[in-house]
Length: 471
Image (cartoon, rainbow, N blue to C red; front, side, top):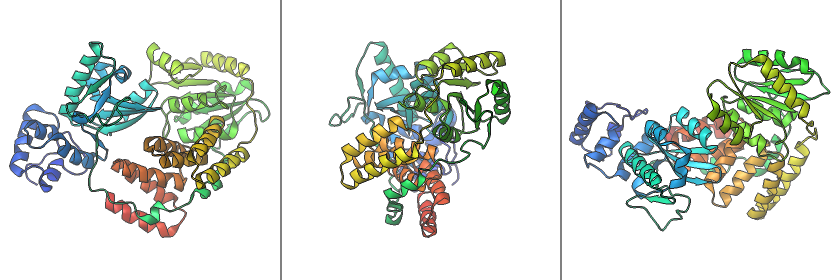
């Protein structure tokens, strides 16, 4: 279409084409908005709003569709003021991010660019929470950031209400008025019903060679797990710690690290902060929140997070036992590892599959009887002991979903997939939930992974067709 520019809204489809094609704006209005964008910068949807062509909500529908994330109508939302302390004002303005609401270990954040992984990771690190990114209109986001932080500086302790906030909702922890694309198709029944809950029991056996197949050193003494995505640094650390006479396991990704923790029960973990698939600080948090694994000493390493503030966050928020910056002093790292390993009492080598099998079977029976509260309690007890068992996470996600807690369910399905990247049942559940909550881009990615892991050839064509409908 002549005169249409991608501007800063990005995406695979031109936003201007979407707006004109749907009749949301006319071609003349689009040209005026593009001219204003060229003169002042910023994003196209914000200029359409500033010129009064459409209300915020109508534009957000298309922005959600274009970027593949659910959107937030800030005029109808409620911001919990204490959450602002998680993101300093200077950073909020720089990256255009505003925490809206919090529930358990999740933080819902409005962003101008929700697809920016570095921004999402930074917020997750600072807050110690799992970030649920939503897109917001840039012009509304800038204005709401200014208003909320002004309220906070003035001593406001409670809530900031959007001018059209829906106070019939539960707003105690903040409330996001979510807008999603209205063209997402229904998930076919064949996919929704594929792979019943009982199929998870086949996934309980330990995965041999979970890390990289790299194990060295003693076979009867203590065990050390070294996790880093740099193969050369893995080799360096292995050579450095060899005099400890410990059995050393190497892992190059976050998922391999989680499998190795489950299968080898290490007595010391050296853990890089930034890893593929699952970040190191998330692994550290899971280790330290488990009654079974929390006594394992963890040394966090990072070349990205530097300085005393980050060190304090890693030690206090994620409860790591020590933190070293890269490049590190090898003598200092050796002495630190030697000291922590000497104080480690040695982890119980009791195999967890049998215990997990019992928990899964009991929980499945409770779910079948629709005793969801009891099932959640049983799974919660099991997960405190064994947080790195994917079927337990999968079943907990299904229980949370049955209880009407979609974001808690999403969290459990994500953890199941982190632990078992090819577990079709978890991938399918996660893809469905992403799609239903408006995360179009994430849904497509996970459906692709589900297709590659699908145990039933007859379902692959169903997934292919569904992918064509949502992309």
